[in-house]
Amino acid sequence: MAEPMTMDEKIKRINELYHKSQAEGLSAEEKDEQARLRKEYINSVKVNLRSQLNNINIQNEDGSITNLGKKNAE
Image 1 (tube, rainbow, N blue to C red):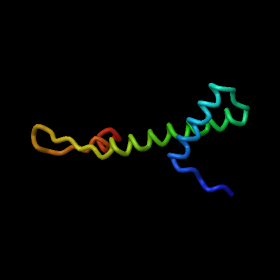
Image 2 (cartoon, rainbow, N blue to C red):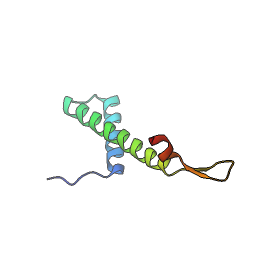
Image 3 (cartoon, helix red, strand yellow):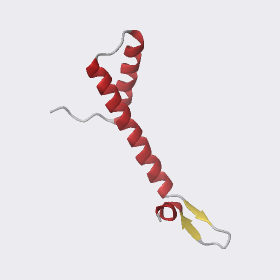
Image 4 (cartoon, one colour):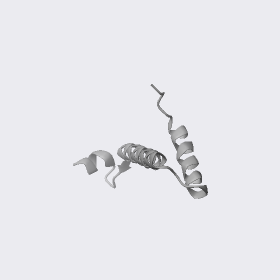
C-alpha cells in the first residue's frame, strides 16, 4: 500500500496536473485524481481556518473575554 501524501506533495501533484492539462490534456484518471486532490486541499484549508478562528478571543469593553469559536458555535 502506498504511503499517504503530505500536503506539500499533494500541492506539487496538483500543480503538475495543472501544467500537464494546459500542455497536453489529462486522461480521465488524471482528471479524477486532480479533482480528488483539490477537494482534499480545500477541506484541509477549511479545517485549518476553522481551528484558527475557534482560538480567537476578543476583549469586550467591560473587560470580559469572549471566545469567538464558542460564541459562533451557539
